[in-house]
Length: 114
Ligand code: HEC
Ligand code: HEC
Image 1 (cartoon, rainbow, N blue to C red):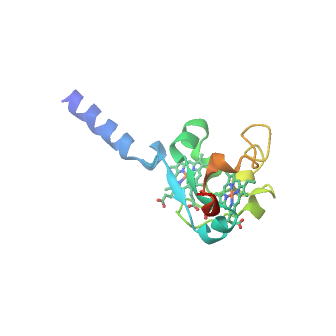
Image 2: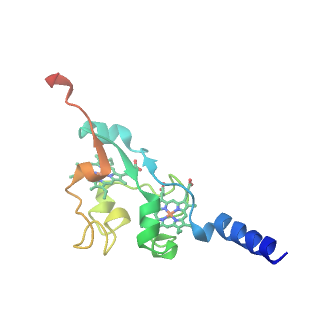
Image 3: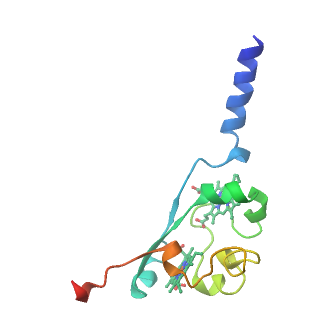
């Protein structure tokens, strides 16, 4: 009996949003046309990795609304201490900097060089 209820509680905890959204990587591509012009492709955002380092409330809702595609992220925001470039993030000494484009974006093959 006791074992069953512990298992029940564990299931509830694992299913609870406070224990993560069960998504490892999210592809952010709402601005893909503009990225392609810069020779880049979509961003693969490692949500799980960020969950392991920070608390949900470090980002939600102050930096990002917790809904896919709801944040209208662009590089102007990123270099202006918002979104991925929020204080203590990718515009600071605490995380890799914004000029490492290929750490976040896929890089397109140059079409004229094949
Ligand atoms: C480092 C910042 C950061 C942390 C910490 C973080 N998230 Fe997120 N989360 C994001 C970003 C960025 C997105 C994508 C938003 C977008 O697409 O505009 C996101 C998206 C989401 C979504 C939407 C998923 C979907 O498919 O619509 C949910 C739900 C969510 N997060 C919940 C959580 C929970 C729960 C935690 C804590 C366990 C957490 N987040 C921790 C940055 C973070
Ligand atoms: C820390 C992660 C990160 C790094 C590093 C990064 N970007 Fe981005 N970039 C993003 C995100 C997130 C978006 C928005 C994705 C979406 O929702 O479509 C974006 C969007 C863009 C866009 C389309 C929107 C706009 O601002 O016009 C371009 C172009 C772009 N990035 C270029 C670059 C270039 C060039 C570099 C390197 C100098 C770079 N990015 C580095 C995360 C990053």
